[in-house]
Image (cartoon, rainbow, N blue to C red; front, side, top):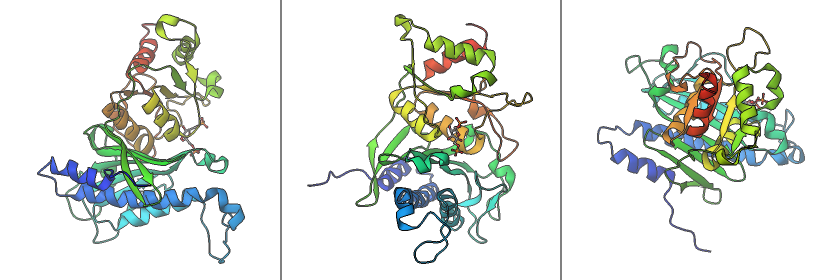
Length: 339
Ligand code: AFP
């Protein structure tokens, strides 16, 4: 079988760089390093089902080596590779409480926020999981280690954002502010090839993704919106269908391609709660940049644009409504009291 002469992700990134004569190549280098980390994680995720058979799910494998859990492995893979890539000044990860420094002498001009393995509760049941990333230009002067303030920047200032989904195939979807492009990994040659150029999310959909188990904890406008989506009305394409996997990357990716609205509103299990479950820096903000670049919208459950939120904590949580623009607009009609 002859293989198509596809556009590799490295070629695509370099071609995009050529459109910006002022570019130094640092962002290109950074993305390429991240892609190597993603391929390493992808290979390990694909082995997950064999873990018990090969004796790799316990603390020691058949060679007697210490074996890490997949989320720990993913975190360490990204952290170690990126600490010496020479393009970053600081990182933050879902798996680590504090800012992650880069190796001394390797400080660069960008920051990286990442969720190494989102949806990790789905690993054992062979359901899609993913890595999410967000890149900003540092604010502190170049040279020397970065500070927390370099990471606490609003999503609108991201220079690149995206995710890798480990599903029936491994896909990389990302934006550098010039549209959203998707690449599928050919594992036999270890390359990501451009498979989904210039992704546009359908303007209006017929799917919603939400954990309805939290219904009793939601605020009134959220409940009324969900009730509305479930009512029958042929003219507006209702009722909608439900699709919920419980891995944000997988739910988001499905909606990006097929259209849909994903919600994780504040759930008020604790009456003081003004946030949901999802984290701003490495879940909500990067996916908000992707969705906006694809023509969709991302807001909080009280109608604020996710990309405009200025974080005050590395692990800040935020309520999220994200997806097809008209579906998010309809949600806003409920929060604004128009419906
Ligand atoms: P885990 O990584 O703990 O599985 O959490 C995944 C996640 O942050 C996000 O990917 C899902 O959309 C969301 O949680 C699902 O949360 P619920 O289980 O509360 O619906």
